[in-house]
Image 1 (tube, rainbow, N blue to C red):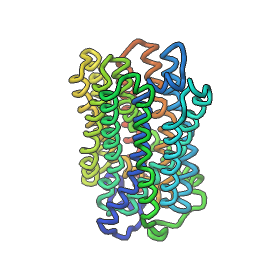
Image 2: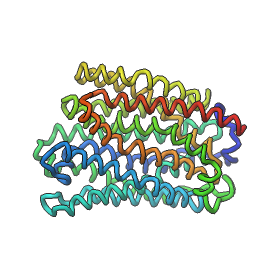
Image 3: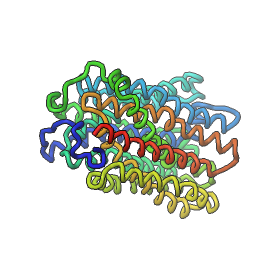
Image 4: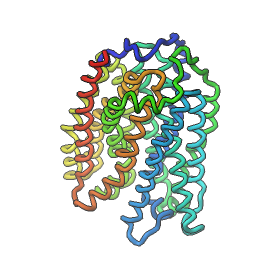
Length: 434
């Protein structure tokens, strides 16, 4: 059933939309994802600066751990946001849920952009920064599932992998934009200027997208419920009680998505500067390259998943990642240079994109329409809370504890093995449903 998902009966019956409606739905869905990921990139890109300004400590490592720990802590509320907002999307309106999530994201971004530092208002600065990240974590909990189902409901049956993959492509474009912003700031401003006000610039720029995102999402047409399936009064309970094994396997399948995103993209600038001793501009260049690979190749792998099956593409990518990621990090650690970093990022970026691009459509294939947003959100946000958000904290700690700079490779490699096993189990599980 899942190897040729275009004909999957679980997806319901669509009224074939026009290309204009399809494109508008993609823009409406990915614009919030763009803001979410942009803020994450900006926070981690300037985590060293933020740690000094909002989490000051005599030991710079403890200060940095507090900063990335706050980043990870915000992910603890993602499951709560997922249950509240995705349930609202399934019960009432995906469009309204998407509008609410992007509004909350904007609030959190504004708090980060304009809050005075610890030297000005003391511990209140730390509290506001933590609160801002918690608000963003809650809102992002409803973003992924709502956005994916919003696209899939409007996509042609034979092209769901292709259309849904634009969510992943948007993440790549976001990393490119955020990386370019980081390069410009690092080159144009002095260290003192960055510390005084320059680090705020990316967050202020992120606020510009808020009114545009709200306008687009409020004015996109809603898919009528009878086009999809009857609404379920308690979609969260239905998903967890009726499909517990499917929820667990989906989480396991998503582990590689979360870990690879945070280890190979979000955390890369901090790792390159602090661990490898490279210049910030070099780290940003690697991130831009990774994002470019993701943006260009996501639709290609999404289209491929429509042709040969999502599970086949993802299984191959997971095995490839498990095999190459540790040697790739060993190569960079042995040859710490811009060239080695860029080469490894191209190879790892391709494997990461091949696995991630079919994932949104796969999750929609798995869950019935009435609980699809909740099902997708469970896979995404529970995994992000347990494996993704704390990846920077765990890697920072494990490198300090073990002295090994190859720790990220082992971490991603372990995730690849787990997800590859879950992909195999989902294949067998799907056959029992067919």
